[in-house]
View 1 (cartoon, rainbow, N blue to C red):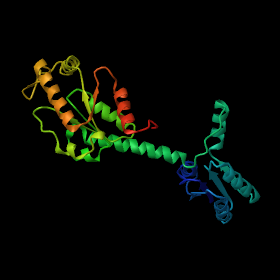
View 2: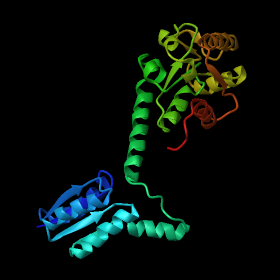
View 3: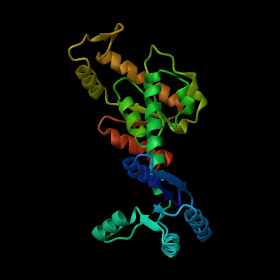
Length: 269
C-alpha cells in the first residue's frame, strides 16, 4: 500500500478529489491523507516530516504560491519523494495561450464553490417565496419586488437569484391586502415594477390565449380593470416609498442591473 498526500494552501478539496479519482483504480491499495492550509515555510517542513513517515508515498499539490511551492518541491526532491503539481500543466498552458500570468489566489476553487452554493441558496429562496406563498420571506430577502400580475416579477427574481441575490416577489391587486411585513423593512430594498397599460393589456391577452378571459370573476385584461390595478399599485408604491422601475421597454437583465446598482451589488458571479 502507498499513501497519496493531498497538499493544499486551502482546505485540500481539489487535491483530494483528484487523488480519489486515482485511488479508485487500485482497490484498497492506496490511502489518501489531506494536509490543508500549507501557507508558510514552517508548514512545508511540518508536512515533509509527515511524508517521511509514509515513504514510499506520492505528494499531490494544488498550492499556487510560488515561494511555498518551490520550497515544497526542493524538500521533496531532497527526500526523494515524488511530488506532482496538479495545477501547473493547465496553468502553464493557459498562461502561454493568453500571454498572461496567473493570479496567485489560494483556495480559488473554494471561492467558486461558495459562489455556486450562494446561487443555489438564492434560487431555492426565490422558488420557496415566489408569488407571496409565504410572507415570512419578505424580511429574509435581499430584495423585494412588488408589482401587478405579468410585470415579470418571477423571472426577475430568478435572474437575481442567479447572481446570488435572495429576491422575493409580492403581487399587487386591489382585492388583496398589502402584506404588513412590507412596512417593517427598509424601503431601499423594495422595488416596484410598473408598465404601460397598453403593453400590459397585450401581455395579458397573450398569456390567456386559449383560456377564459376571466380569472376568479376578475376581467384579466379589461382596459378599465388594468387602469384600476395600475392606479392601485401606484398608490401602494408611493406608500411604501420604494423605487419604481418602468419595465415597459427594458429587458429583465436591464431591470436587474438597475436594482443591483442601486443596492451596490457587483456582478461578479
